[in-house]
Amino acid sequence: MRWHHQTKLRIKNEIHGSMRSKTRLTCLVFATVLMTSALAAQTTPTYPLWHDLEPGKHAVGFQLLHVATAAEGEKRRAVRIGLWYPASAPPDSQTMVHGNYVEISPSATLDPKLETFLNESDRESQGRQFFDANADRHQESLENTNVAAIHNAKIDSGPYPLVLHSLGRNGNLFQHTILWEYLASHGFVVATVAQHGKSLDDPWMDFDVDDLKIQLDDLRITLDHFRSQSFVDSSKIGVMGHSSGAVVGLWLAAEQPDVKAVVGLDGSINRREGKEVFKAGLEKKTVAAPFLNICRWPHDEYDDGFMRHLKGDIVRIGFEKGIHFDFQNWPAYQAFAQATEPSSLAVRSLDEAKNLFVATARFTRLFLNQHLLDDAEAGARLRDKTVELSSGQASIQILP
Image 1 (spheres, rainbow, N blue to C red):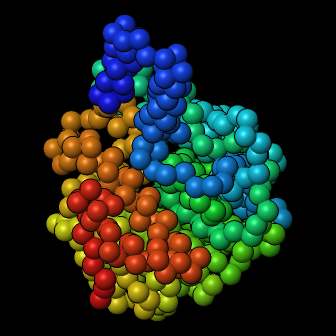
Image 2 (image 1 turned 45 degrees about the vertical axis):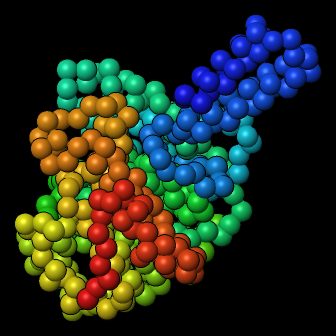
């Protein structure tokens, strides 16, 4: 702001210390107005929770919907989907505030009891993002902050690449809304699939093959639904997932040859404890799609045994300082409120967590641009600028 302050002082001196022409003074005042407007545009983020992320050219729409298997009766399974997409919206369209996400109901609810259960779970999870003495105030501020999404905005004419998101085990539906808004603004349709067990009598999932295959089935249902939608380019399909969601995402890619790219966000494949589950779930299949493995690395529990099952290109981007939940919305919330819980600070600073989050979103988009939009320049930038894009926090390796 120093330059702006000096500009105002110069104008004051000219008014009181000289007899320059009215025309000259008018020009200076006009220039100052323009400069002030430009400065405000540069320093005011469009969406506060995005921090340094650059919006794309599209407005962002959001819908909550249910789809289901064709089977009737007890065998019919409803799947709850959050959908973010490039939207056609007037410039004065009202975007949501963050708290609206858990207030929206699907237009058609195929299983009311399931919807009630999942909504209550999301509300409980979304409502406890802060842990300091001012947690309630931070939470209220978060819930009233504008986000990019416009509820039920008209889907813009496509078709667009489809990216399925596989949640971490027992994760809430809105754990990574910022990334999904960001991708939608840059021309991707993103569908994230709510996670629950076999039934409401047994809704919680364990980290084992049988339970994770339930999530795999739900991803199949979702993929089948969107393949037939006119706004989706069914030849350009990607999958991404956080934690155990990365395991299921790779399983899906192994059986669906039209999946062109997979992104893991600190996926459980990287941990020794996940090795046998990942291997058993593949059932002698392999993954041909290229894989972007964004993770904590080097890491005491890291294990690269999964790589023998992956036949496509593997790009590993490692963050030495970070916690598992820095790959979700959480660090963006903490940086927004300038508040986090102490044990996380023992691993990384708040700025480091924010940089990790922002860089992860950029890396994901570049990788998807490369493999779903045939953008070779994006792939080259990912490889050449990774350190720069992460403020020096990330390293990159092309594997094996």
